[in-house]
Image (cartoon, rainbow, N blue to C red):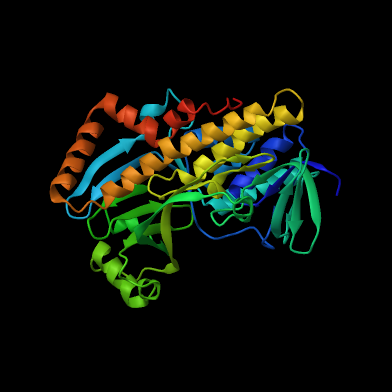
Length: 399
């Protein structure tokens, strides 16, 4: 293989977005993925307005909208007290062409991007089953080494290989932050749960001091994301008895619920010490991970990729110096810390609050915000990541 402009490590949604965005700007790029197939594991499923604008720029928004579910409202609820506040994305209709959350599993998004690469940029080599085990750098090049001993040279390497990033570890970068005491149990249920909980909408955040949860609808199923306390083992949390008790606590007496999936995972808030080390740049989960409350992690990674594609294409073309990459690294790290992590941590803490006075204060605050058109609009600008995109100078999206 001749020297590439860019080698992307990781064929998840962030890595593939970077590859497509770079290819559209005339950059030679290859993608290296350890697995033999694109992952079909359910993880994130929310796309916010600026991210859909990026998808439009990349020419894939129509396909996403066809496959996804448009969620125009979301609710904040309490397990004991019911509905606290309802927010309507329609208040943002003068800010974006997409005043809603699009619910679409990230693996479907990744496949849409991969198909777009195949159809429009066949020159991009997406190599599955190519495990990268090391990276080295010289003044002019970076070199990747695969598990088979192959060496691949590129002027720039993008580490988009997830939270356990081989590239980040090879660089010796720190990944400081915290791990929450609770974990989340994810249940996928093929049943119209809106008939069991009348009044819920497509996205529902439900506060509870012992077991806060998220109930959301995606194209194929409803998903429940429930907090699991630290004293419950993973095996116990996945057991039939524990799951049945959780479902009974939510739906009381209920008909049989077809359970298609159950899994448990830990929750972290972490940010890498620097997004750039010379010719290697980290993005997405390789650079930052956060609580799923708010649906911002995947979106932040896609924003990393789109912003970087603009800057890196200019560097490759000789139209900008590498200082724009330093600026990108600082900008995206700041976005991860000040916006995504701050908001998701705040939401997670509020959902799990145990102090009764604080719980009531949160409820009053949410009700007052929802009742005030101006405050609700400001709240939704943050929730939809529009404020984030503007504050951290996400490049203009075509259209």
